[in-house]
Image 1 (cartoon, rainbow, N blue to C red):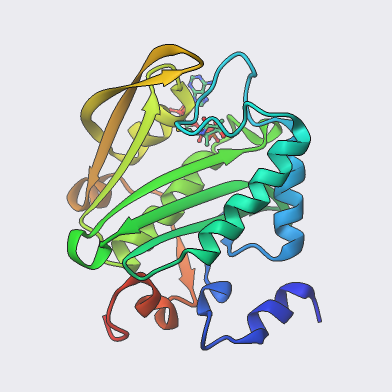
Image 2 (cartoon, protein in one colour):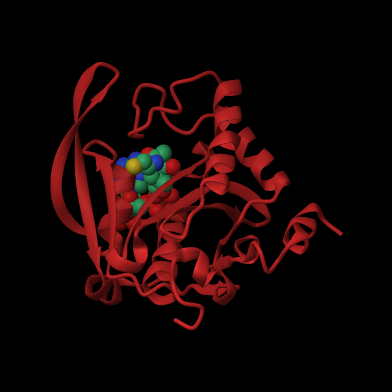
Length: 226
Ligand SMILES: CC(C)(COP(=O)(O)OP(=O)(O)OC[C@H]1O[C@@H](n2cnc3c(N)ncnc32)[C@H](O)[C@@H]1OP(=O)(O)O)[C@@H](O)C(=O)NCCC(=O)NCCS
C-alpha cells in the first residue's frame, strides 16, 4: 500500500479532502501525499521564476533553495492545520505524466455567504509556458463554479507577470482595479481580476472531472446535500 493510500485510509470520513482529485486531459490535481510534497519542495528548491523578478505578493521565493524547499512544506502543513469551513485554502499538487510539476491553490473565506474564491499557483520553471498553468487554473475554477456553486473567482498579478495575466485572460477574467505593493523596496502595481459565473461559462474550454467532492462539501462550509 502506498503512503498516499495510507493517509487517505487513516480517517476518510474525517478528512475526505485527501481523496479529492481533479482531472483535465493532461493533468491530475490532488491533495499532496508526503512524497508529492517532498517532490514539490525539490521543485521549489530548483527555482520558480527569474530571480530578477518577484511575482508573489508574499516574497517566499526570495530565499535560499533550502529555505524555499522547507517553506513550501511548512506552507502546505499550515494550510492543513488552519483549515476551517469558514476559511479554507485548498493547495493541490499538479501532476503531469506521473510527475509533480507545480502547485495550484484555491481559497474561500466565508464562502457559503460570499461564494467567491481566490486562486494562486506556481509551476517549476521547466514546466512553464506549455499551457499547464491554464489547465490547472481551469481545473480549480471548475471545482469552484460547478462543484461548489461559486459566483465569482478573483485573481491578482503584478502588471509585468504576462504568464499569470495570460492565464486569466484566456479563462475569461475581467479587470477589477489595481493596487500597489512594496516589492524589494519599490512600488509595484498589481492588477486585480474577476471572473463571474457567466463569463466562466462563456469562456470555458478545458474539460474537467472532479472526483470525491461530495463528502468534502461540509469542509467547504456547504451543506452535505448541496
Ligand atoms: C503563472 C504560471 C502559473 C502560468 O502558467 P504557464 O503554464 O506558464 O502559462 P500558460 O502556458 O498556460 O500560458 C497562458 C498564456 O499566457 C501566455 N504566456 C505564458 N508565459 C508568457 C510569458 N512569459 N510572456 C508572455 N506571455 C506568456 C501564453 O502565451 C498563454 O497565452 P496563449 O495561449 O494565448 O499564447 C507560471 O508561468 C508560473 O508558475 N510562473 C511563476 C510563478 C508565478 O508567477 N505565479 C503566479 C503569481 S501571481
